[in-house]
Image (cartoon, rainbow, N blue to C red; front, top):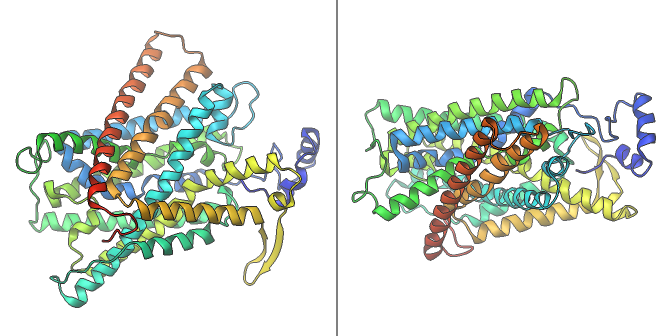
Length: 482
């Protein structure tokens, strides 16, 4: 995480100096010499809601359509319970079990609780998925921006007009905005953007629910069933299996935030204890999210039936009220601007901390240049931070333009992240911290939960890969359109 000038001055002076500063009452420095944490239950809840209620909510109606009225809501509730339960285990891993020192990242938590090759396994999974999420959110934002233009086109030219627009310009616009937002130094300074993003997620989810409810009340019910899409009518038997697997991945992605839980917890004040506050924030975030997911998924399925689209906001036909659809898609874009940063700040912090430790005397990497901005005041610019973050945005944008497969990308990301980061590591660290003996009831229950979630992740990954293979035959790189 990018260091403030105060933190840079402390670097290399030793823990005794830090102890003296803290004892002397430096209000800008925390117990380990890093900048003072100011996070609260509400900022952490906002970060979680921003991370969880993301683009995944748009595909839930489609996911329930694949699973039906019985399995669909049941799977949603199951993922909700699993995510909350394992997040409480992970929250207890924030401080080292031996020294009590803070673990600033997920990898640090694995290092202090498990060690060995599991540290590298965690890092590969976490940062690959954070990178993939950035790509996925870039794709989703472009689809929403193009949807606004399509809606306006239909309104002005008529509903029979073939209004199609390339997504690439919108991906470039989104990337340009992220270049600017990426200069927010660290997670601690991101709270205001998370508040805005969380408000936007509530707004567009509420609009989608309201439109679906209005369609249902108005008699516009879709063709639904207890088991979802019908074999021989909607899909073949093989397609039914692949789609069910992919739906599991979409739902897993919709609940995926454990990969940044420790980083969110690291923004909290030290009192009350961070793990207690984080558990409350997880309860708030997952509970609110589940209510919205059930409403969006179930009402969306009721409105569109087995023909539910991958992005349920596009299912309302871009017709009247066109301005409301436009506003909902604008809210999605604003939300994704913030969510992209929430998922990317840990990547920035990892690379910048690594570079600072490797080249401690480099002014290019460590020196802050203070400039005065109108209506803002003093602002610190670090040349390494500026150039490397810009390069990262360019890379994610280029990949998004090359592989613009919405549902399949979401499902694969969810499958890859769910088991190792949401289930496996929290359970293994809990067993290690609490010295849970093998083959006891608690150990057996945790292992059964872990193995069951592994099977779900494998099935979801296989389904998503199959969907991507199919999409590759119909899509051309850098030529996607809505």
